[in-house]
Length: 87
Image 1 (cartoon, one colour):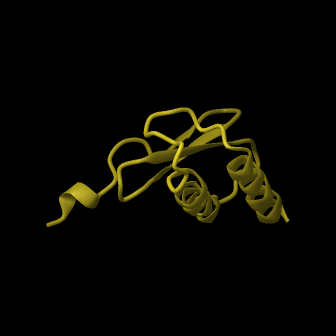
Image 2: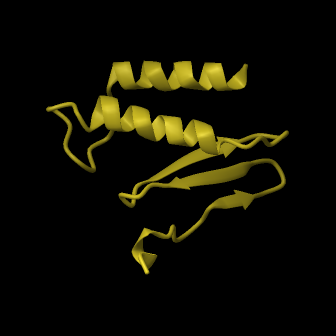
Image 3: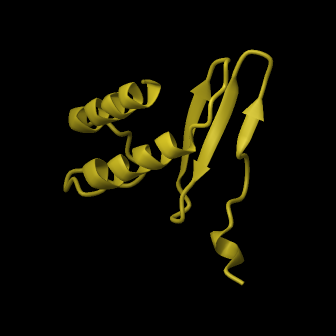
């Protein structure tokens, strides 16, 4: 039941010097984060980035899907979320 909503693919990949973490959204989008040791849990940050993407990118009338994301306000908010997360 509702198997199509289950994430498929990579969730995290650990290497000697980094971790690649992936957040799978219900819409099929994947948001990645590269972490350096010591590793911390970043699911909440990735969820927040997805919320910012929904608010600042998808609602922008000039954005088209699969287009590179180059919106200063979005980038600024992601930087702010990252700074808050690191505190």
